[in-house]
Every structure is written in structure tokens, then in C-alpha cells.
Image (tube, rainbow, N blue to C red; front, top):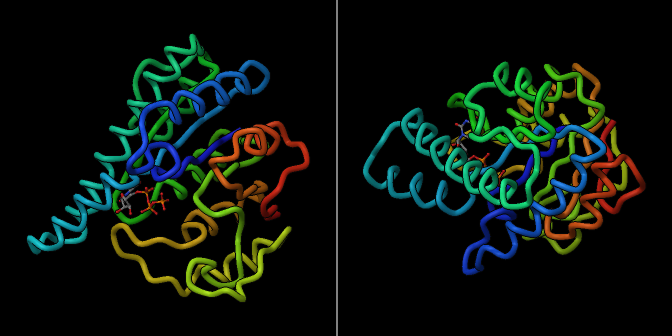
Length: 226
Ligand code: UTP
């Protein structure tokens, strides 16, 4: 199973390390039954560096590279938290997808951040899920599922309990790409999953018992895309 954890879930602003310890415990427990490949987002550090870099007139490629560095730093922090839980985790974040897939043959958990400029860690998770022939991808994010409009902007936004990949693609494809931009799921990631037909569960990452159910393939609260 592949789990994509948003940076804002793993390293929320104004909180301490107790949240990441709880996430590590949740992942460690789940990995005793199912091998996990975990991607980690950049969160507020990525946003801050991208914002300041943009003010300094950096090009989009360089901004993405800084975003990738932030995701890898967050991935490193999750590795430390998992080691404290005595999880069988690869001792450093994998840098590329083939390395992660190879390592997952000998470790219960492998963690990684971003890979190349031009997409987000959700797309990395989708590629990882495809390459590893994962049973499903669970996206632990800051919203409790996929809505037909941005729920932070529109009160009338409706949540999908389930949807097809064609519907997800229609929803995310108009969203224009720029470093640090946010959509319910990365358009490239959606395309990759649509092609490989790997089911996607979108859940609120702060509800850990619900996240654990989605990882185990049980009934969960959120959006199921297949
Ligand atoms: P995130 O994966 O955190 O993307 O990567 P995001 O959509 O901004 O954050 P979430 O998903 O809402 O938490 C942070 C930034 O790092 C760069 C992009 O600029 C991205 O916006 N990045 C990340 C890449 O260029 N390539 C990658 O493989 C990963």
C-alpha cells in the first residue's frame, strides 16, 4: 500500500512533534500487516521557501527543486519518528522511485519525498503505486475527501463519497501547474492512476483511526476513486 502524507498533516505550523510521533505509530502498526511505501509533502517549509524564492525572481524549476528539498527534509523527520517506534524502516528517504521499490522488498516501510520538478509528491505516490503494483494509494491530506469545488472557498461545495478516475481527471485537469499550487489531487498523479487503475482513497490525515482503516482496505470516511 502506498500512503501520500501532505506536509501540512505531518508538520503542521504552530504544533510540536507529538503529531508526527502519532502518525509514525499509526504507520508502524499498519506496516506489521502490510508493507508500506510512504511519500511526504513539503508543507509550510516548502511554501515559505517557494514564496521567498519567487520574490527573489527565481525560475519555476529552481522553486520546484527547493520544494523537493523540503519534502526530503520532512521525509527524514518521519524516518526518525518511525525508527523511534522500532519500525522496520529504510534508514534514509529513498531519492528515486526504483530505489524505493527495491528497498520495499526488504523493509516494512520505505519513506521518500519528491523526485523531479514539475509535479508534487501526490504524483510521486501515484508513480510509486504503479511501479510497486500497490493494492491502493491512500492520500492523507488536509481535507476530508474530494469536493466538487474548493470547500475552503465555497460553502456549497459537495463531497464525493466515491467517484471515477474520469470524474477526478475532469475536476483536476483545469488546475494550472505552478510550484506550490494546490488541487485536490495532482493532475499528473490522477492521470497515472487512471491508467494503472489503482484505487485512490482520499482521507483527512489528522484522523488516524480512519487513516488506518483506509490503509487496511476497510470502510473509511472520505472519497474512494476507482
Ligand atoms: P508537495 O508534494 O508538498 O506539493 O511538494 P503541494 O501540493 O504543494 O503540497 P500538498 O500536497 O498540498 O501538501 C511541495 C512542492 O515541491 C515541489 C513542487 O513545487 C511542490 O509544489 N515538488 C515536489 C516537485 O517539484 N517535485 C516533486 O516530485 C515533489
